Image (cartoon, rainbow, N blue to C red; front, top):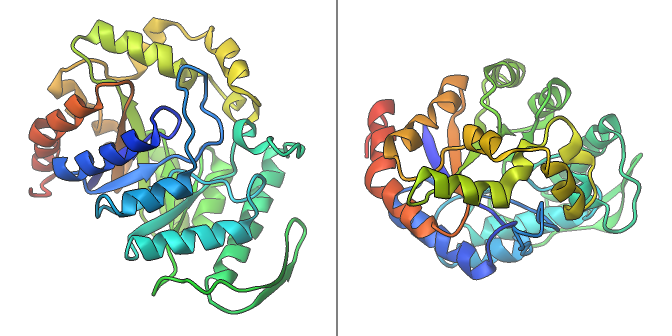
Length: 322
């Protein structure tokens, strides 16, 4: 079992993200997730630095492996460009890079004016995008003409020694089935034993990653206030997160999420035991790696506490040593 830290591009400046990556390594985390957003979920979060610039900076600040959680390689950016960006990232990270991908959200992908496809079409686009990316990672000249993408005599010259693994996110049975078919691993944010089992059985036991958020603060009430102000959108149900097109729409629908709902869904405050216990549903669901992000400004205190108390307790309970 590996434990990682989740860098939230929706909430923090580029400098803060680099600082968090460095502090996470010092605290003893095993790896990093980093989100890929054009917009934050709401204006209170207030940031959205370009993920590929951030990975370059992080590669010079720490030596942890990095997974994009997740990139959408289908609408906003053509998969041929994602293939080049990911290859360069893998070189900068000495091969310790995983391209995590998913079918995306309208929030980020609508910006060029493209119609937002249905879920089935988005999955078909994702499958073709993976074909394009893997073809370009061979180093050969690629010409491709498919239902969604055209590539004309393209070749990537800067490549890692080995192609990066591609992990595919899946929040429902159809996407999880595709992840098992085309992915080298799986990504989700729900402690769903059913979906993890579906992926493991369909993929022959390939690795699965999950991530969740906590809010470190001086008290539980303070943490709940911060979490609700910044991340009430996490309580938006169903497929709305995939189809709403702007932060203002998320702010509107988030008014249906109460502070108590936010408090009940995330660990808030400084209780170390509660932070340790928050990992249990993901471990029990069968994930191989679990990543945690801190909501709000107290990430330095959170990372220090995790390094001193939370990570040692997790590793002790999982028998994974130091």
